[in-house]
Amino acid sequence: MTIKELGFNENLERYITEQNLSSFDVGRVILEHKERYVIKTAENELDAELIGNLRFMAESRHDFPAVGDWVAFSQYDDCKALIHAIFPRNSIIERQAVGTSGQVQIIATNVDYGLIVQAVDRDFNLNRLERYLTICNASNVDPLIVLSKIDLIQESELESLIAKINQRIKDVPIFTVSNQTKGYVELEPIIQSGKTYCLLGSSGVGKSTLLNSLLGELQMKTGEISSSVNKGKHVTSHRELLVLKSGGIMIDNPGMREVGIADTSRGLETTFETIVEYAENCRFKDCTHTHEKDCAVLTAIKIGEIDEDAYSNFLKMEKEKMHFESDAIERKKKDKDFGKMIKNVKKQRKDMKY
View 1: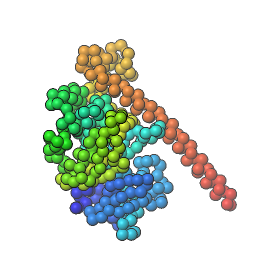
View 2: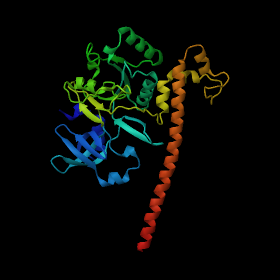
View 3: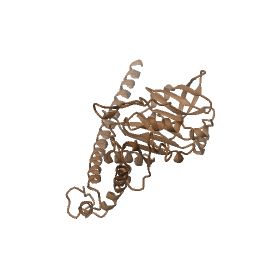
View 4: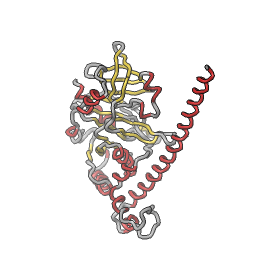
């Protein structure tokens, strides 16, 4: 394997020169667990941690490495390393952190394509599909829709589902995969060497089975669907970057049952482009598209040019985004106040010494 097969490119090489990092080794984070990392190079895999200064200077989650990051490191043992710098990211897939307000959770970085996997037999949900699309569109990641387990429904049902997707979602490629009849022949040709793909979807939709097929070996553990709650069981317990037999790079993720929308104005505008285009023709610039007179969006819904379910989903996610932005501002203020308090305490201690 070469470092280019891991996704290394000219932009990263230029950054090394500009930042005088040529004295360090370069690798990609393939595993992350509680501020401990595994770095992959062309020859080796190393357990790594941040140098103290990086950890001390970190102001948010974005200042710590994530799966997919390129880092500069120094090796101090046969299989151990210290991370000295994190390279700029060309994309960050993130969602609102579960159970917290105003914070984001980084899913993966430096991703080229997001594979949004939905099982057609039980998981299929257009609203959730639009949520994943919004996350990809906000992250500078090209989305690809993958419908799995198509052998479990009739051909006519599959055609109906694809028609529903095409009615609400435009210009996003759709691929169908199956464990039995059709396999993964549709998906394999799109995997490009040196490009990074990220699996997105709920538990039990077949992400690990899909990955095993692309890897060409049974490497990822797969699980059964829980019969009591009709939901997938969590099998993948952590994020991990793997190199496929085709040369592509895949990031696997634990199943996500909550897909919280963060600060994603660009993502919403791209996902709901039709609604945004009609909104430009509203009579009032501050139109909320809920009750106003001469609202072009509401008119388009009445005459069937905007899907009513898509409109409802748009309003719900727009509301979530506004709440997130408000919570983020409040959290930032608290963090700033806390930082001032720490500085004052340090200053007082310093004054007491003299």
